[in-house]
Image (cartoon, rainbow, N blue to C red; front, side, top):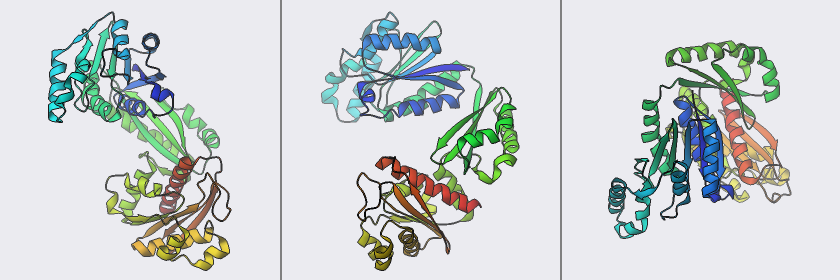
Length: 415
């Protein structure tokens, strides 16, 4: 199996101003063709740091992919560091310049061509993969069996370069083993206890099959990965291992293939031909966002509402004033009435509701930060639950609660 190292270059990543989503995407794409990422590094845009990091990276693997640090000026430090590392020089590449010119013309920006002309300067030993969605090309350098790809940092430029050009190139260049993965999603068992329960099964796994524990909120994803030359055989072996695992933990398993909880829900709703709606207060639309992130969600998700203001809960969802007065707006009773009102409003089989205090201040009724009640109404049955997570920041709180609500709905539907 080939080993790869990913290097993210840029002070904006180190400062926390920008989130590195490229590494996650690239690592997943490499994994799918049997290349293992053994290290992910984030460094500043300084020539000596880049050169030293390349030296370290090539001690760990034969393939290095860098993202970021490619600018439109001749003093581009990343480009210079790559050229220095491979004892090369930088010069104008006519093919890249013509591609850049055509790119500018197509977008009506030919007047700034000269300002971006420096991006057509590349190391003379490099192979250029033209960027069809930006001005900075991807450069590949190869020497003594060591390969480095230098990509721009913009995610919508990185993705097509990786998927359409680099992955096909690597598949053709190397004789790669298949790497196949299955995900078993487990709820209701803490990770440490789960590990004890399946220890004998895990220890009996063949050498070419590995297991990883991936906690997501209150769910644990068991990622089972197999590597080998025959994909069909590997898939069957994974299925065989899962069938050995299920008798141990089956009551707590909500899925054995899909990874994302919204996708798991989508399959169940599709099979059962059920419709869904949401009424969100403290989650601010995150529930609806997660549900609609799945293609085809319009077939089961009929709509959602964010009645953030208490009066809107009363006016639109028909929550009783007396209920709010007696129990406060952040309560089991209000969550339940919100779910009923939402189900009636959208005429769905299922409705979900949330009411709570996401922070950073206490709720209007003095309820503590991190308190939330949520209701799941399936048909005429209502399931209302309480969570208290004062340690979570606002956005993390909203995401965690939404994950938990969908997870609980999946558990209800398959029980």
